[in-house]
Image (cartoon, rainbow, N blue to C red; front, side):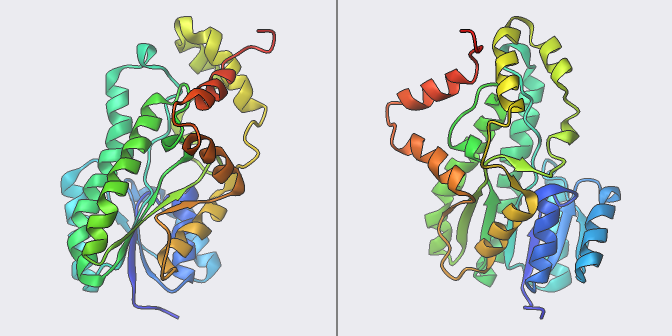
Length: 286
């Protein structure tokens, strides 16, 4: 049954965003599924058809202020309301450290993963205030504990954390709830694949940092993330964050994520976190 509520979701061409768009439609939302390139909507439309639901696909580039404004305005004009916003669009991590990664790449990572969230949130807030709606943003455990060779991505996600944690009480005072959904590693998503990175290319470009990048990539390849989840599993938490009458500010999507981030909250001086992350860069013989 259609609830009459309208949700705009960014980054829906694959992975978490695609699954969230389909599941939100199944939950009765009118779903505006946005993506930078609408020619990549086939997978979403197929999944929606198989689920027996429809979604409204629209173009939205979170790094283009005119695209953001045009899309949000058009959605409000089409439906007369906007009840929820899901900030999901993101750019893959570079797996490079600052000395070997150009600043343009860092700026792009921060532009998409942080400033894009700010821009879409800013555009949506007048309509969300009118509806007494909510903002659900997909964060990451990498925005709670910084990871080696994830500096730009972690910095952007840390910034999202600070932005939303600061905004939450102000927005609540205007009737808008703010929720952060915090997954750990995610399987079955094109997020990493879309980056075009390979182990060989990363090691070639690492220069003197190859000696610490190689064991880190070995650690990743060994499946060092027992808490990895599918995009569909994360999407279930997003839909719950949309529908729960009293959602928490931060939703950690697995027991692994809760245990992992608890290290940070019980380590005010940073020693345990530093030892843990440093161990990922050590060769087995070291």
